[in-house]
Length: 179
Figure 1 (tube, rainbow, N blue to C red):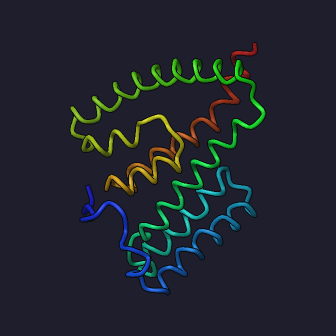
Figure 2 (figure 1 turned 180 degrees about the vertical axis):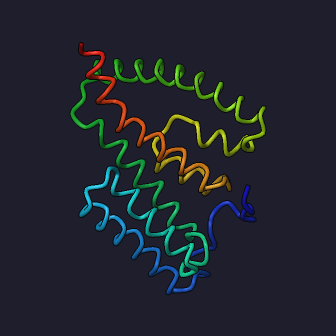
């Protein structure tokens, strides 16, 4: 695959040129705004990712996001997940946790099968296969791939493909099952 970075996160923000910091902020906010205007699914993650990719491939962004930006991303993702439990009763919470554990175990087994096949056939290294096929949100897997030093292109494209397939085929499957 591609060259692996020597450190899991970027340099400290104090070691990052101010122009690069400004470009990261611009790519995040501008990409989000543009994707929202285009009504793209997952605009908060897809828009900044596309704009950052364009700026990186064109040589305008020349380094990884600073560690503090990655930590802040993790912090706000965690707040967003935790805030979804507002208003739940204890019984609802227990039922959701139980359903989540059962679903998670099923997905983990299915993912393990895919990961093992990918690794055995030499399609991708174990870390990349693990991050690409692990059931989880795209933003969380991107942050994990950055921290773990995984191949971001491989991981992100797999998660985008999964989202596109679900959005494309779920309505068809639901109509088919409804008959």
